[in-house]
Image (tube, rainbow, N blue to C red; front, side, top):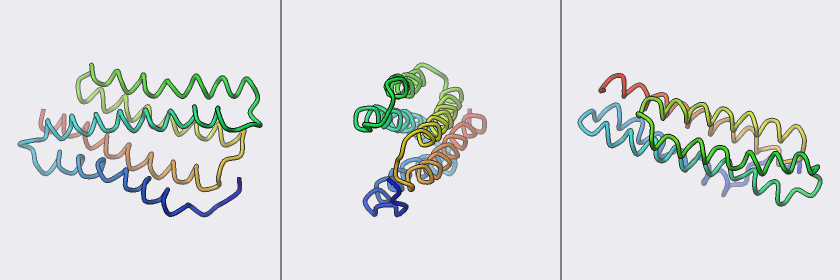
Length: 151
Protein backbone atom coordinates (compact mmCIF):
# COMPACT_ATOMS: atom_id res chain seq x y z
CA UNK A 1 0.00 0.00 0.00
CA UNK A 2 2.57 2.51 -1.08
CA UNK A 3 0.26 5.56 -1.13
CA UNK A 4 2.45 8.29 0.36
CA UNK A 5 -0.21 11.03 0.34
CA UNK A 6 -1.96 11.47 3.66
CA UNK A 7 -5.72 11.50 2.98
CA UNK A 8 -7.29 14.82 3.92
CA UNK A 9 -9.89 13.22 6.17
CA UNK A 10 -7.19 11.30 8.06
CA UNK A 11 -5.17 14.50 8.49
CA UNK A 12 -8.18 16.37 9.88
CA UNK A 13 -9.09 13.56 12.24
CA UNK A 14 -5.54 12.77 13.35
CA UNK A 15 -4.40 16.33 13.90
CA UNK A 16 -7.82 17.35 15.20
CA UNK A 17 -7.43 14.64 17.81
CA UNK A 18 -4.39 16.50 19.10
CA UNK A 19 -6.44 19.59 19.99
CA UNK A 20 -7.66 18.23 23.36
CA UNK A 21 -4.08 17.23 24.24
CA UNK A 22 -2.74 20.69 23.42
CA UNK A 23 -5.65 22.58 25.00
CA UNK A 24 -5.68 20.58 28.25
CA UNK A 25 -1.89 20.68 28.64
CA UNK A 26 -1.88 24.43 28.04
CA UNK A 27 -4.81 25.06 30.39
CA UNK A 28 -3.17 22.98 33.11
CA UNK A 29 -0.24 25.41 33.02
CA UNK A 30 -1.93 28.78 32.49
CA UNK A 31 -4.92 28.18 34.76
CA UNK A 32 -3.45 26.82 38.01
CA UNK A 33 -6.74 27.27 39.87
CA UNK A 34 -8.31 24.49 37.83
CA UNK A 35 -5.10 22.63 37.02
CA UNK A 36 -6.25 19.48 38.81
CA UNK A 37 -9.36 19.23 36.62
CA UNK A 38 -7.41 19.88 33.41
CA UNK A 39 -4.76 17.29 34.35
CA UNK A 40 -7.41 14.69 35.11
CA UNK A 41 -9.10 15.40 31.78
CA UNK A 42 -5.73 15.21 30.00
CA UNK A 43 -4.93 11.83 31.52
CA UNK A 44 -8.43 10.52 30.76
CA UNK A 45 -8.16 11.66 27.14
CA UNK A 46 -4.68 10.18 26.87
CA UNK A 47 -6.01 6.85 28.16
CA UNK A 48 -8.81 6.85 25.58
CA UNK A 49 -6.44 7.65 22.72
CA UNK A 50 -3.86 5.08 23.82
CA UNK A 51 -6.64 2.49 23.82
CA UNK A 52 -7.69 3.59 20.34
CA UNK A 53 -4.22 3.35 18.78
CA UNK A 54 -3.72 -0.07 20.33
CA UNK A 55 -6.98 -1.25 18.81
CA UNK A 56 -5.65 -0.37 15.35
CA UNK A 57 -3.57 -3.53 15.58
CA UNK A 58 -6.74 -5.60 16.08
CA UNK A 59 -8.05 -4.11 12.86
CA UNK A 60 -4.80 -4.82 11.04
CA UNK A 61 -4.83 -8.42 12.29
CA UNK A 62 -8.38 -8.90 11.00
CA UNK A 63 -7.87 -7.32 7.58
CA UNK A 64 -4.32 -7.88 6.33
CA UNK A 65 -4.44 -11.22 4.54
CA UNK A 66 -0.67 -11.68 4.15
CA UNK A 67 0.02 -11.77 7.90
CA UNK A 68 1.50 -14.97 9.22
CA UNK A 69 -0.49 -16.66 11.97
CA UNK A 70 2.27 -15.77 14.45
CA UNK A 71 2.24 -12.09 13.48
CA UNK A 72 -1.57 -12.03 13.50
CA UNK A 73 -1.63 -13.49 17.02
CA UNK A 74 0.97 -10.94 18.19
CA UNK A 75 -1.14 -8.12 16.72
CA UNK A 76 -4.31 -9.38 18.43
CA UNK A 77 -2.50 -9.74 21.76
CA UNK A 78 -0.79 -6.36 21.51
CA UNK A 79 -4.01 -4.61 20.55
CA UNK A 80 -5.41 -5.01 24.07
CA UNK A 81 -2.21 -4.13 25.96
CA UNK A 82 -2.50 -0.33 25.50
CA UNK A 83 -6.11 -0.39 26.79
CA UNK A 84 -5.08 -2.35 29.87
CA UNK A 85 -2.14 -0.02 30.44
CA UNK A 86 -4.36 3.04 29.99
CA UNK A 87 -6.95 1.64 32.39
CA UNK A 88 -4.36 1.41 35.17
CA UNK A 89 -3.86 5.18 35.06
CA UNK A 90 -7.28 5.59 36.69
CA UNK A 91 -5.82 4.09 39.87
CA UNK A 92 -2.50 5.93 39.85
CA UNK A 93 -1.42 9.37 41.06
CA UNK A 94 -1.53 11.90 38.21
CA UNK A 95 2.24 12.14 37.79
CA UNK A 96 2.68 8.36 37.55
CA UNK A 97 -0.38 8.07 35.30
CA UNK A 98 1.09 10.61 32.89
CA UNK A 99 4.39 8.73 32.82
CA UNK A 100 2.59 5.42 32.16
CA UNK A 101 0.74 7.01 29.24
CA UNK A 102 3.95 8.48 27.80
CA UNK A 103 5.60 5.06 27.98
CA UNK A 104 2.47 3.53 26.44
CA UNK A 105 2.53 5.95 23.50
CA UNK A 106 6.22 5.24 22.91
CA UNK A 107 5.67 1.47 23.14
CA UNK A 108 2.75 1.74 20.73
CA UNK A 109 4.89 3.60 18.22
CA UNK A 110 7.57 0.91 18.56
CA UNK A 111 4.93 -1.77 17.85
CA UNK A 112 3.75 0.28 14.85
CA UNK A 113 7.33 0.35 13.53
CA UNK A 114 7.64 -3.39 13.98
CA UNK A 115 4.37 -4.04 12.18
CA UNK A 116 5.26 -1.73 9.29
CA UNK A 117 8.55 -3.59 8.85
CA UNK A 118 6.62 -6.84 8.37
CA UNK A 119 3.49 -5.89 6.42
CA UNK A 120 2.55 -3.24 3.91
CA UNK A 121 0.68 -0.25 5.30
CA UNK A 122 0.17 3.14 3.63
CA UNK A 123 3.42 5.10 3.46
CA UNK A 124 1.82 7.95 5.40
CA UNK A 125 0.90 5.78 8.41
CA UNK A 126 4.17 5.67 10.32
CA UNK A 127 5.14 9.35 9.81
CA UNK A 128 1.65 10.36 10.96
CA UNK A 129 1.86 8.08 13.99
CA UNK A 130 5.26 9.58 14.89
CA UNK A 131 3.95 13.15 14.77
CA UNK A 132 0.84 12.26 16.77
CA UNK A 133 2.92 10.32 19.32
CA UNK A 134 5.32 13.23 19.82
CA UNK A 135 2.58 15.80 20.43
CA UNK A 136 0.54 13.48 22.67
CA UNK A 137 3.63 12.55 24.69
CA UNK A 138 4.80 16.16 25.05
CA UNK A 139 1.33 17.11 26.23
CA UNK A 140 1.53 14.37 28.86
CA UNK A 141 4.97 15.65 29.90
CA UNK A 142 3.41 19.07 30.48
CA UNK A 143 0.63 17.44 32.47
CA UNK A 144 3.18 15.59 34.61
CA UNK A 145 5.14 18.82 35.06
CA UNK A 146 2.07 20.65 36.36
CA UNK A 147 1.73 18.00 39.05
CA UNK A 148 5.22 18.94 40.25
CA UNK A 149 4.54 22.64 39.78
CA UNK A 150 1.10 22.83 41.39
CA UNK A 151 1.00 19.71 43.52
